[in-house]
Image (cartoon, one colour):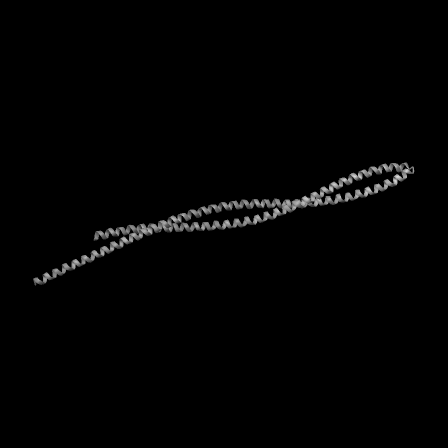
Length: 252
């Protein structure tokens, strides 16, 4: 009986020793696992902080791009308004050039008619002078008087012809100038219209860029919020893992 009791006590001691040994091994495994969790959580926290810095850089860059696009839009609107003003002015200049060209051509036709009329008058006055001189030589005093008058008319006709030629030359110079001005103003008008189209394209592009920047900013804010949330969670996990380590050590 005593022998059996001793045997039972020995088995009990062996069982308790094995259980304690197993518990000790389990505690060591838990501590090791907790340390690994802490290490992993610290790595995750470092990655989250990198992501936060990257998101903040992206956010700052997108905000700078948005501000630049807003300035570009304001400048595009100014350029567009200026080009429209220039186009309206050039269109007025084209209309005025067309009017000037029409008036100068009208004046040139009139001066040309006056020149022909003065030439006809000169030819007629010369014929009259010849006739009046013949009659004057025959003793016709009235014809002598008419001859002197014809000479005055001839002198006046020559003066008028010289004046008409100058006027006609001036009209032709004005016509050439009007044609040059009209050509230049039409070219300027075409350029203004091309600038307006280019400004409109730039304005539309900058508006699209601004919408894209605003969308990127919203996405950056979402990413930043998510990464900060992950960082808070990683910090909480680290604290929890450290508590688990302390708990496993105390238990061991």
